[in-house]
Every structure is written in structure tokens, then in C-alpha cells.
Length: 340
Ligand SMILES: *[C@@H]1O[C@H](CO)[C@@H](O)[C@H](O)[C@H]1NC(C)=O
Ligand SMILES: *[C@@H]1O[C@H](CO)[C@@H](O)[C@H](O)[C@H]1NC(C)=O
Ligand SMILES: *[C@@H]1O[C@H](CO)[C@@H](O)[C@H](O)[C@H]1NC(C)=O
Ligand SMILES: *[C@@H]1O[C@H](CO)[C@@H](O)[C@H](O)[C@H]1NC(C)=O
Ligand SMILES: *[C@@H]1O[C@H](CO)[C@@H](O)[C@H](O)[C@H]1NC(C)=O
Image (cartoon, rainbow, N blue to C red; front, side):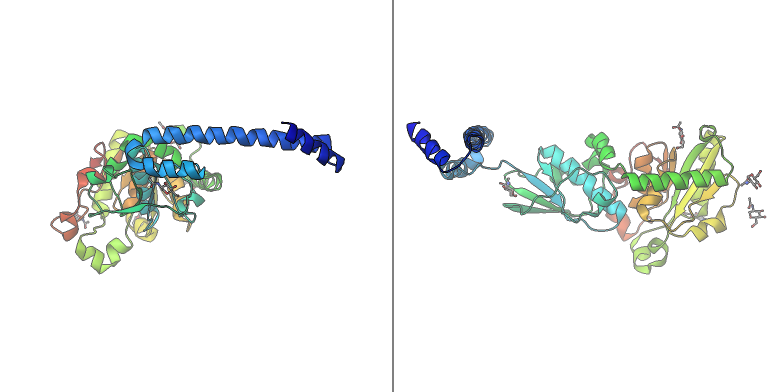
């Protein structure tokens, strides 16, 4: 201590004020406390990882580098909105199952319109890759990752089984950001106003998502088994809702709204006419109470966000097709959804 005192006096003589010296002393104490804290962290992580990493923990101790007990899992995103949502939700569910941290790349598109909580961590060391075998079948192996490693997931993970235990959290993750919400609310109100609806509580709103596009026009997809619902299915589903709700009002969203307008023109129907981004259309539909899904993961997620009664198209994929053979409807469509 006398050494410190002498040093202080020297520095004081050199013009260092009392305040600066106090500051330096405080920082010094903080540093000591911080080191102790890391020591405790180290001990804690060693005791929870006795088998796996005693050696590296010991090594870290020697080097006084706090050992990170971080265990991460991320997903290699691919596809469009509906795919991305399955990938993120499944990533979340798989991470929670293993009690490890889900992370996303910095460029993760979902972040631009959802309030998702996963952060980015780079680089990942000790990395292993889990590659999904089939895109439309739940794989139990995804719940058996060896958490000695960090993981990256590759696949579509299109099953509610990956995240059903985390439904409430996923719902929170998929809250639209304010700018999307504001635009969607504005357009929803414009739509109902154009139909002279003044009291929303006097109506039951049903979102009808009609996926056509590549499921109609891409011959390769069609041959493989991707099917699109025709007007008979949509009419049957609408009739079912009308029988349940005399005040049913239908809001159509589609990648082929002209087709919808050609086939449906009753008075209690509205179309989303604007060329919105996919997320804005989804956010508009999420104002509805129930859903009619045709095909595709975009409609799937619209129904999931809405949460009410969902009717889905049972002839997807086309029966007997190649896709049909690698598709499991029971792990794809929620058990509570109604097939028609
Ligand atoms: C995961 O990667 C991080 C580096 O970002 C590393 O600190 C950590 O030890 C790795 N976790 C596992 C379980 O290997
Ligand atoms: C809404 O009301 C206005 C004014 O009464 C009327 O001109 C218009 O045709 C109505 N629109 C619909 C869709 O019923
Ligand atoms: C619609 O498709 C079903 C099979 O999914 C078929 O039985 C029906 O005839 C089709 N209806 C029209 C109008 O094309
Ligand atoms: C629906 O279409 C039919 C024939 O195309 C037409 O006669 C009818 O007025 C239309 N109904 C509405 C509500 O626009
Ligand atoms: C149905 O949706 C409308 C519009 O978003 C909402 O005001 C109403 O509360 C919903 N009804 C029920 C029963 O949830």
C-alpha cells in the first residue's frame, strides 16, 4: 500500500488531481471484482459441463480468459416468407428443446418486419450441420442434437411439431413491426369502409388466401404434385363458414387476384387489390377471425397467426404424386384444422 501511496504522491506532484486518482482507484477495484465474477462464472460452467470441457476450462483459467458456455443453433434460411417463418419457428422450438440459444445471421429478412428476438453471433466455433431429409415430414432427430457442438440447421422444417410447445413465444416473435401494422390497419379499414361496414363487431371476418402462381403455371411443380385449389373447394369452405356465421365477410388475398375476381363476386366479399409486400398482405389478413387456406406455407402461416377456425385443402399434394409420397399431412396441418 505504501507503494501505491508513494505513486499517488508522485502523480499528484506531477499535476494529477485528486479526482482523477480516485477514478483510477475505483476502476482498479471494479477490475478486481470483475475478475472474481468471471472466476465464479468459470466455476459454474465447469460444474455444468464436467465431462465435456474440463480441459479447456482449465486452460482458460490459466490464461484468465473467461470460458464461454455459449451454445448456439442457427438455420440456413431459404425460400420466401412462409418458408422463412417455418424455418425460424422450428429453429426456435429446436433451440428451446435443447436449452440452447437460437441465433440468426445479420441479414435475416424476418427482422425487417417482425419483432423477432434472436440476435447474431459470429463466428460459431465447433460447428455441426443438421440436414433435414424430407421437407414436409417431422423428424424426431432434430430434437436429438448433441449440445457439445454449435449447430446450423439446413432444411424447410415444415411441421408444427417443431415448435408447438413454444406457440406463445412464437406468436410474440411474429408480431409485425409498427410500420407494417400501421399500413395493414389502414388498408383493412379502407377495405371495410369501401363495403360500408361501420361496425366490425357485427361481422365475422374470414381471410381467404388463394395460392396459384407457380402451383398452377410451373409444369414441373404441378407434375411433381403441387396442386392448387379450384373454385369448388373455396365455395364449399365459404358455405361452411356462412352456415356457422350468418354475418361472414370474406377478404381475399392472392398472387392471382384477377382469377379470384372472375370466380367470386358476391356482396360480402372484398379483395386486397393493392400490390403489397407479402408481409403487409399477411398483416391485413391477420385482422380476420378465421381462415380458408388453399396451398402453400404462406397461407399456413396466415392461418396460424389468425388462430381461429381454419379450413385447408385436403387435395394437396395431388394424390398419388411424388410429392404426396414424401408428405405427411398430420405433421404439416394442425390437428385442429378442418380438411375439405
Ligand atoms: C459456439 O461458438 C462460440 C463462439 O461464437 C464458442 O464460444 C462456444 O464455445 C461454442 N459452443 C460450443 C458448444 O462449442
Ligand atoms: C355504400 O354506401 C354508399 C352510400 O350510401 C353507396 O353509394 C354505395 O353503393 C355503397 N357501397 C356498397 C358496396 O354497398
Ligand atoms: C375442383 O377440383 C375437384 C378435385 O379437387 C374436382 O372434383 C372438381 O370437379 C373441380 N371443380 C371444378 C369446377 O373444376
Ligand atoms: C356477379 O357476376 C354475375 C355474372 O357475371 C353478374 O350478373 C352479377 O351482377 C355479379 N354480382 C355482383 C354482386 O357483382
Ligand atoms: C373479429 O375481427 C374483428 C376485426 O379485426 C375484431 O374487431 C373482432 O373483435 C373479432 N371478433 C372476435 C370474436 O374475435
